[in-house]
Length: 527
Image 1 (cartoon, rainbow, N blue to C red):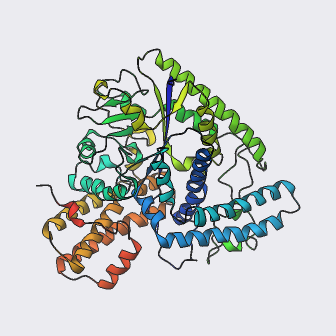
Image 2: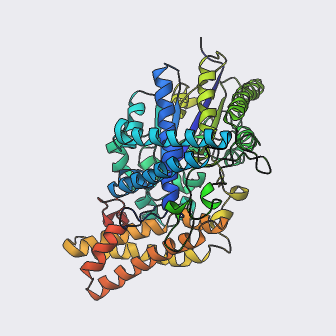
Image 3: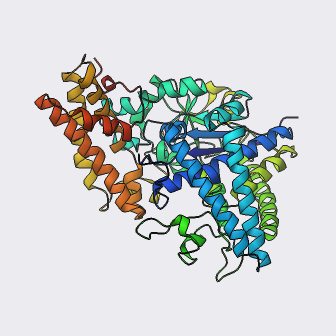
């Protein structure tokens, strides 16, 4: 029997580019590199383990996963793979000591033993089950039809801010295209970084054969004309791109659920609380503390020890309530529709794990619960779109929108980060100038031009202005933005003087080695 309603979850897997090329045991755990290691341990590995369990148990499930080219590159990087194992081995060593330290407290000891065993299991999964190749593991589920991979632009740029420069927009779209084709076939969906939409992007989506994308709810609701089915059904743009929008009610409900006092407080790590001599493995040379991954406290105020059993019970209740609320909302929407309504939940992947510890347990429970419910069915976006008569979809032009603060561009353009753009836009013009001036160069000059293209793409990342806006890792974000622009300028001036240091260029190529097959000519003007 055909289900009356549809639900779709699309998760975005992305982190800023991090690659400090130091010796393998010199870990930058306090900054973005440490966040990358946590991302692998607390999001990607649990997600793969969940997919494996569901598949083994023959549970019907569908998920969408947008893997950014930046994360794709980092997951493929052998240097980061080695550093990740160094990081997790330090956790294992600390876990052994922690189980001894907490032996006099049964509650803490139970948690420390659980974390210790979990870390060992994740190391084994990373090295043995997945052979350090998580991308291949995700592709396994894609090939089985369980997982739909969505593509993204090169460095997670806020595309509306590049829409005035067709060469840069072209480079952001073209550079990772071969990466996706090689590893994931030809994705039909395109994930807009920060869900940043403007109609100027559509010709590029069409040019690279992406059939659909996702916008935030207000982007569709304020479209022209207003969508007849609200956010509960896809539309097509006048040019033929299919548009789905997020279910804002589902987003708000999960944000509220994740803040439950019974759940683990992910912001409290013993690496910042225990005496220095106990956490010596996680102290830098200058005494700076790093995260250990051992977190013992619940979200409740005070020093309430995290109780896994209570949290699991709350998760089960929240899962059941969320599914019931979704069905009720879709049932109400269906009263005004002749088509099958869909609730699309699109969110950053690290919400389920690194920010909400119980999130992956919730998601697995939801998929299992929905598989036994005849009212609702999990689908992938493209699966839902193409089971309908696409020629009958309403034509709507979504309005400029994003998922940032207040729904527009405030996150990426305010007093904290506006200084980036006058330098960035000038550098973008210069990159096109270089591509036009040196169309057929080879050897050292071609290497320099390709590196200049990498630096421009890295400078365009939306991560740097977003971190500055949130006042999160501000020094790191400012340094990355400034360094990328400075590196580009150095190359630009060196090419102008016809001299470039081979040693300096080789060092930079090693540090910023993203897109090894990049071709700087992608920045040339279209004839």
